[in-house]
Amino acid sequence: MVAHRKMRRNWTLMKQGLPDVPTWQEFLSKNLQSSTRIGIDPKLISASNAETIIKALEPKNSTLVPIDKNLVDLVWSERPARPRNPIIHLDEKYAGQSLGHKIRTLREELAKKKHQAFVVNMLDEIAWLFNLRGSDIEYNPVFFAYAVITAHSVNLFVEKTQLSDDALKHLGDDIKIRPYDTFFGYLQELPSVLTLDEEAKILIGENASLAVAQALGKDKYVIAPSPIAELKAIKNATELEGFRQSHVRDGAALARYFAWLEEELNNGAEISESQGADKLEAFRSELSLFRGLSFDTISSSGSNAAIIHYKPDPADCAIIKKDQIYLCDSGAQFFDGTTDVTRTWHFGTPTEEETRAFTRVLQGHIAIDTAIFPAGTTGRSFHFFDEHLQ
Image (cartoon, rainbow, N blue to C red; front, side, top):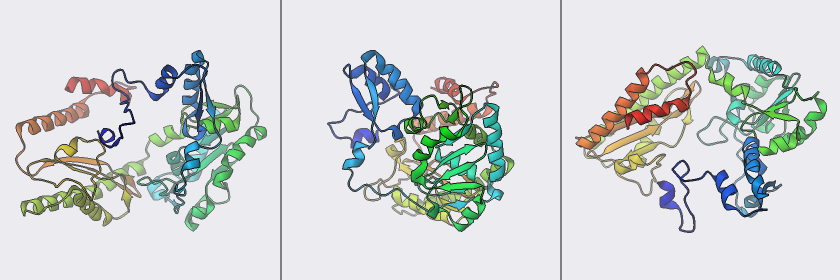
């Protein structure tokens, strides 16, 4: 909805996922002429995705052509510099496991499958593995970095000046800190210092970029699910308790906000969606262990509540009204957990249709909460709930 409203007429909106709408990969293979060379920034596409596209283009004698310099970057004269915000150590009392324990566990997983090294490119995995936190990407406690783990070395590619004294002390002498910009050069040399063969290769995750694969060289790597993603998915007791406690604190801020909002509306005050979001952030900022919001607060009244990822514009947004539905989707980052809470309110008398819609959503939540899942159930299996509730 937002894209349709903001796009200029010389653009065609392709709503991926709808019937008869191709993915961008399918669009390439079906709509381009034969013998087409398609330039692509290898840092912006995964190696696995590139392999799929190259195979799809073969019948048309076309191919992807990695380029050294992104053409958009060449004309982006006012591009902001890459953020280099401070990186801090996340204490074990919040992480639940030490850096050393995580490295040992990871090496055990690599040894089971004879991987000689693992290239870590996902920022959340790096933050988790090293028990470090940053703020290079808004609303996310991560920082720009890469890592390479072998049986005998741990290499972290990051700007050293970003690391706080506490973080440097935490990493110690066992972690080799290398400049961020030397990462791809290091990858080019890595195969020569390892013993590689058909069974023993370098592991790169399914989201690793084509640039990573190119730097390592053909037949030097294998693409597979990241072992860190699997290890990170199983939360330890400390993390679970942190989630609970962060939601308790966050819930108090939400209760204060909704009580304040109801009182203001009952007193006839005119509160905009943006002002409501700012007030909620102010309440959250008073909480202990608060690090910032986890995403832009979706403070939405009336029809705006139907817009996915709606963000109120302070200069031009709706007024929160008692006779309309008010949806507030918001969250925060804490040292011990992250919250994401959606609440739908009506401060007056809802219509029959609003009551029906709200009740159906509630029924859906109850159905999922009380369902018994067979062993091995994945997220994709939840689609039958959607069909059942429609």
